[in-house]
Length: 252
Image (cartoon, rainbow, N blue to C red; front, side):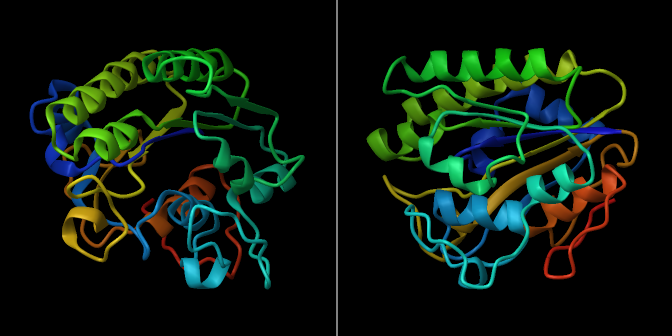
């Protein structure tokens, strides 16, 4: 078993209502439209919690500025790398470089909006991930486009919904091309309201989560799934023991 983790930054569940492939995944995957983020629902703290399976108060990064851990918790890529699993990451926001320690990634590709438009960031990251799928045990594909549109135009604005739909075109592309031995986890880090996020309110805290693959029951609606559950789910799928410090629970 291999794992592809896709995260679409700032994707609210209600942004998926008119996306056909999202509705199709509800039938093929175990899923929830009521998944919960962590406090604060801000991009870097959320990703640190996803990859380290603890709350921001534990790992210490509570803003979009990385803070070294005082009492270090081993992250997902470090755990997998230590167990001889090949990990690769394709992303479009430079601050995510700190979610995995040096040496734990076989491939790390940043496609930044500093150099190309958001649409090209999504395309290039997806193409990189597609090329790496035959080689890796764990691939992380990150798309920042909707969050940027939310901040500029408002969450649930026309521009925001178009950015979400554009990302889902590429989700369909890569999921449809997956080898049979892959499982897919698809989620967001947080939602958003007005032109911002970061509050402990449903609009910011509620995220969609899909778990697709042989270990997951098709069409099953899940309860009480948290962002911290993803790392233990990945390790379980790959047959690797999760660290005792991790707080999340596996969905396998």
